Length: 244
Ligand code: PXP
Image (cartoon, helix red, strand yellow):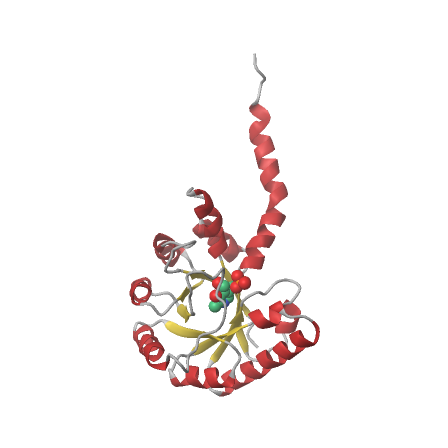
């Protein structure tokens, strides 16, 4: 059996950079560290409002990354045009709202079937594996298969946000969703809200190819890297000789 792949979403490295308009931290540098640490791929979401990842980041990642690049994107003409230029290994279509903090729900593939199918066809013709971000809902999965996308990403957010019996129910939906997606011939990815506490449950989903994880890894990196960053600054301040 092939090992379960990890795609690291580095959007929030760019969030820290954009907060101050500096050139650092550089998402490409973060991606290289992810690669060294064993990530199988890098995911970035080029939002229409460009709140974190910028166009230049996506092109730089495409140029320099050796591992897979997955571009998360809305089905919007300007963004699709960029995807066709960048040619990531994979493009995951997601619903996008301007006001949301993060992607809130899965796509309504059944309701937006034609525009999605058209974009899937254009991406596939360019050699890009199209993926559709969906809730583990049979009607959505069946519609996803009809678009001829090779892949779906199951939205794990509801499971990650629940506890007790509700979490068990959400996990059952994810397990059944993964099984159905596989039966429909779809490659199965999953992601959203995953962290070290809830990952155990998700590992019970069958037929998984890739887990895409972002916020919790970037948040954890801030903590595990804090002591080293303070030590670096202390070292840099050693040159101080007082006021004389
Ligand atoms: N997968 C998709 C489709 C997403 O939209 C996101 C958030 O950008 C993720 C995975 C990663 O979610 P998180 O940052 O909560 O790990």
